Image (cartoon, rainbow, N blue to C red; front, side):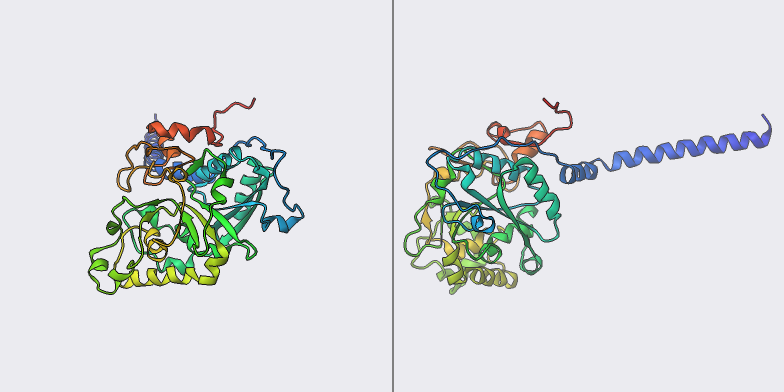
Length: 360
């Protein structure tokens, strides 16, 4: 082989190996981000079964907008985003499946203003063609400056704070709503929960856990302050989980409770009085003044603690709602082939269309 041709051959050979090296390096460096992108932006969901009202169900006005405000309907509010979409879809299935009047349930979804609402609307409509729902844009710019870092980064997501603004975001004609997190499933009729009596003065109802160490939700700075420490004076304040609540929106608006919550968040920015995300401001405003709900309606903590997300058992007693609050989410553990035993109770509601699923 002539000398010039040999040099050219060696140059191409080295170039080929360099290109191969770069491709392999890129493939090894990027699987995590690629997987995350695929998970968040290319999820496909199956169509859910159609669920019908029993003959005894009342009729709600089907003339367009009015059904979104009907007092005969059960109104459910949930947040909606790409990260938890799979959980939200499972929660919707569970609500409909166990309802005696599924066609009387109206969903009110709060989604980030920056989200692709058209994609979210299409995703829900394809899986639930007959679902009555509306998507409300949530501008998180105001609350973002009030969020303090907490013990787990997922708790700092601005969408976690959307529940503070429900009365402002949802239609003003709505009187009562059931707020649900996206990491839960119901195994009972949501109409029972929605009918929880709020008494003459309570703004919201939720299961209370008075055996929990309530003082641990606030810092020594809070308890050592002579003024702040009197916040709960005269109130039998107990911990409650804000992932399942029945809310009287009219009373909320009349009492301007959004402003009360924001005032505590503003104080938190000046002096650290709590550590756990969006929960403590709710406790500061409402603890000791809420209507009780049976514990069966929030078997929470199934996601484990906020640090390791270890497996947990159910609390003693009957179960109407399973809630994977905590670090571990059932769809993540199932995908990683490391599920906890109770994750098997979530799996039947999963609508995710796997790439290898065969069309029947």
